[in-house]
Length: 191
Image 1: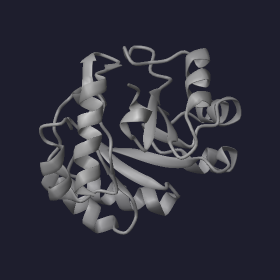
Image 2: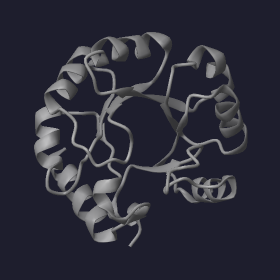
Image 3: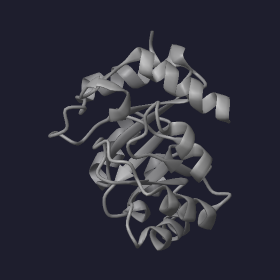
Image 4: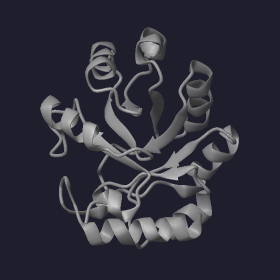
């Protein structure tokens, strides 16, 4: 069973992080994004690098970019066309201010993270503060989510969406179909 068959709303692909075991080549990511069906968003997880973002927009054209690093949106917003931009922020004491600034700069959604794919659970209280501060703008909850904690997490934070990676893997980069289906089921029953 694929993640799409399990009912996901979006599929994320890692690109531009050569040291990550989840990183994909240009060829792989182009092929995967091309196969994402209508009504499921393709999300390319990458770095805030003007040349990289321009290349992705031109050559791959995903629905969304999930961007890590120092904000550079003013340098490429016009290059991305209709691609939605998700700003990933550090889950620290500056998160509230950074989230407001991200929307002021023109990002379409924000999420907090603690390093990407580490499996570390975020401070849900902080996540809720950020979510409440920016509401009704979209806040995406991530950080160590799995089948055992996602219900508690969404009840505590009430996010726009959730993002899971390592908590649904049998090994780095390889999702467990049963875990994905169970996770999606829990989230959809709650929402």
